[in-house]
Image (tube, rainbow, N blue to C red):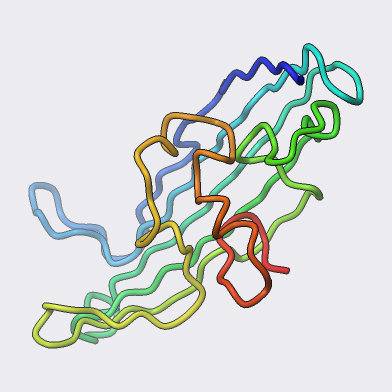
Length: 176
């Protein structure tokens, strides 16, 4: 049986910049474009595994731009989101040899990708919205409370969905 020691060492807002229509001092108007970044780093130590022992470091960088198209283009009720994701690091699961992995930010191959890109339009007087584009399944559907506090992938999206074939939408980290 594999034994792992996991430490989430960094989860911070690396940059939070506001671009575009910055409100004047004292105004409550949100900016037209908001840019943010978050870096998460994990250190996984495999104490006993099927392929050996060792320590692996992993990083997950999210860079997100949100734009209010009403403020930018006078397009009422429309928003845009672009989300770039970069994952780097070792392969702790190769040491541990588990079926579901040991860390929720582990990827088989280092990569940078466009993770989300969508436009959303309010409809029916703002009582509903229509979203078109590439969106994370976990953002609006299939969330559970344990996923925010635990590192193992099994606590995120359910394995009954994650292990299905190509016809089911995938969430993280990359499409097939």
